[in-house]
Image 1: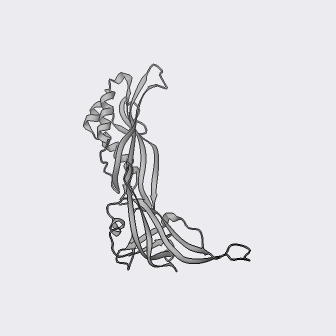
Image 2: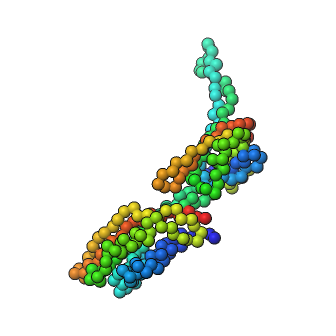
Image 3: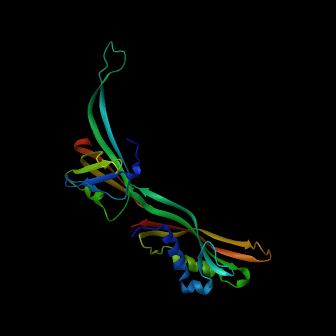
Length: 140
Length: 130
């Protein structure tokens, strides 16, 4: 089956969104780049950087750095520590199954943690906690 | 003819020395066709003069470890030379450098994709086709 890089993105979001333990902590699910309006506890997955490692006649493997983070409104009562730990448990050195690819590695390269002041209402705070995850997949 | 990209280069090898088959997961090859020269400069010459000796055919390969094709490593155990064929671009498959060769190999396994490298030396006459 031909490989499609977007399938890797989707597989990552699906894996996080399908985990019951993570959904219990962040019930508004996992989303690519942005969550739906009204969401207060969710996971965001974004592409930070990507490169294709070439080889003669094709691509040896796709090397991508993803931002995967738990995001929650400060008043939503989210256990951010547990959410970050669950994200790490789901991803760190865990194989990702994607049609058209062979999994090589998935691991966290850096941690992120910050508090964001809401653009619309400066009295509101958003918590972000997660990390940059390196995912390498070789086209089959 | 136009300048072509090495992205579509190929390396083929047959341990039996007959019909080379593509080695996979490689990303480069080098071929050296250096010739020794003897200095035969004599009195009265206005500059140094040389005569060529024999051409020394050798080279190297680079790529990534792929467990589905370990021919390169098996070749390091061969008691007889195989046939190696190098093409700068698969879009011009008739332009090849080929001949019998002995191969050796290295593998560098770090935290990223394991890299393989190899070198070769001619074990018979080499030709540039066509």
